[in-house]
Image 1 (cartoon, rainbow, N blue to C red):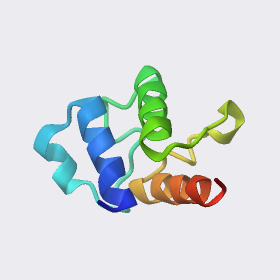
Image 2: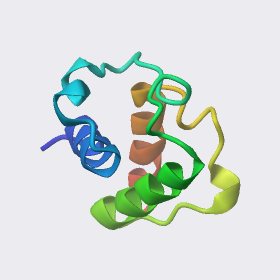
Image 3: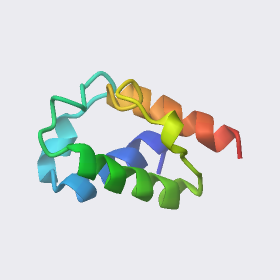
Length: 84
């Protein structure tokens, strides 16, 4: 499973999106577009990303820009993976 699909699976399971995740593309806005993605859900998603990809995400690395779209989130995760 590629990084994008793994992230979509995490978002789907964490936010209980069901089949709605199928309509999420690389350009789909996450914050503000997915009502389920509130501040507490972001923390849960981050924890799942850390566990799935065996990475550590520090508080100062998280911003609205990171969660702007699926693409920006994927780029961030791939950068973190490459830094391991």
